[in-house]
Image (cartoon, rainbow, N blue to C red; front, side, top):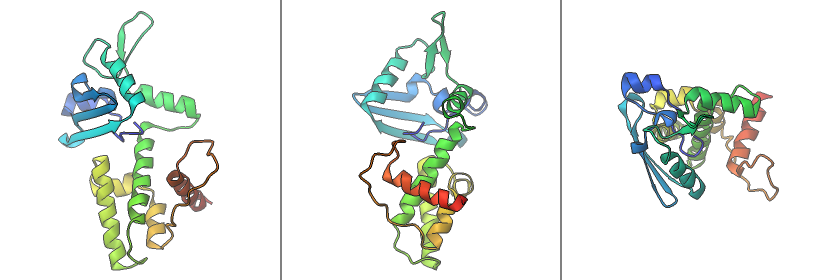
Amino acid sequence: LEETRIRVGNDEYRKENGSFGLTTLRNRHVEVIGSDVHFSFRGKSGKLHRVDLQDRRLARIIKRFLEIPGQELFQFLDESGEARPIDSADVNAYLRDISGEDFTAKDFRTWAGTILAARFLRETIARPNTRGAKKQLIHAIARVADELGNTPAVCKTGYIHPAVIAAYLAGGLKPIKERDDVDPYQLSAEERSLLALLSAEAR
């Protein structure tokens, strides 16, 4: 979920629209070659998604899922040894349990969209509050939408925190500074920078 940014999915969408998300993927939607994992499936609105991931640990885990009988990719064996599919409700319940907060799978995509927007906007060179800056903003949002498989309009309103857009237009997206201290939450410098921006906005 965090590494691929794929929607969590639900069985209703699969049955009604033939679209898939993480929890409704079938074995045929994934191929594991060594430490490489390749996903290929139809997502929301019938869009074809191809997602590549290189992670030895996740590749090993997904291979184990593929060994469980049945077509569903993500399953677990219950107490009687029966294969049971993992659904979006299971994922969201787990996230709430381990965090103690009302987090859902969508929050991962929102965080990813906001991180990507900040990253792409830092790459621009236009001056704040100029026509060029606004064009760069439109381009950055389109890049985020492409990464998440959304339309730019949905991406802007639902997956990018407005504080990032406001900071960019005001010239407030500062360069990221690498730090030597170990972050207790294992956040990257990029994530720390974004969190500092959002924390300042919340004050």
